[in-house]
Image (cartoon, rainbow, N blue to C red; front, side):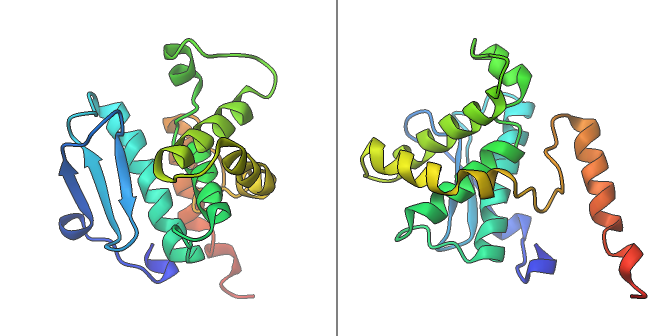
Length: 174
């Protein structure tokens, strides 16, 4: 976040609140605050996914200057990235939801989670939300920043972090 020109403070940018419905968290673009829904998060791994998901939105807000309220394609892109990179669509999560398949299942899960997220926060038709997701899916699904890869497990996340720390190391003298 610092390298993208934004600062994050645990004391100021994270809030735990009771939330309505089944929402687990959210990113408030006006205050750059991540809200964790303490009444809807029931274990550590779920909280880790929610924090990662919302931090991806915060990163996108900082890096890409997302127009959350006026451009549904911007929202769709960030939701695709967050679903793809946060672990929302991991095999273990999908099995626990009794939702699994073989061919292109990860992509279908990411597409579905992004669509549900858009419909949860915007009053638009399902068709308009699907079009926004379809329009940006390929580009946004393949954008792994700041990780450089999809962290499917803790080992992948550790490797992504190692790669991130070393990414500029080899280009210093060029």
